[in-house]
Picture: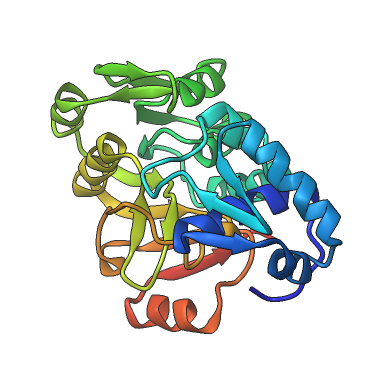
Length: 258
């Protein structure tokens, strides 16, 4: 972790991300990395523990599991400015007449909100209720909601019916999120969500991943696809040297939301 002063929401995201990559974190190390006092980090961990996102230990914290991630409404309230910039940059890559597949998640919901204000003549297939509510107000965007079993934790529909429905369509672009991104590819904590993302990738000409900086280097439960399967990554800051080189080797375009 490199030294930088982070705000509270950004610290929350980084703590959870660090625990995806490592079984434990130390308060002293986090304080140095975040540019804040140990007491500030201790309060952060106490709050995350109260939310059920981490387990408090003496001098640090442990993660609940690689298979655990905060609910989508919790994630949506974190890194709002950064995700807003990612959504705005992603919306610039959408053209009139596009058929989009957008998966369920906090960053993709921010993207849909920006898209609703700027896009024209689109068809959008999504399993995400937040995306439907954001885009449903625009008369120039046709929104198709995928069937399936609704998961309140993820705010979307999942399961065999969802994947079978998506495989009936062809899209020009798929916009997906992920729990983490490593040199192997994007990872996801939720297996049901992973299968939906894979279906969207398979049925789309161009595959675009939306991630904030806390996802860089974060390893999660399940690999969604190899890095080479992606065409674009849209992020709020540049990845570190190792991930940057891996993306370049895989011929993945990186778009920075500055």
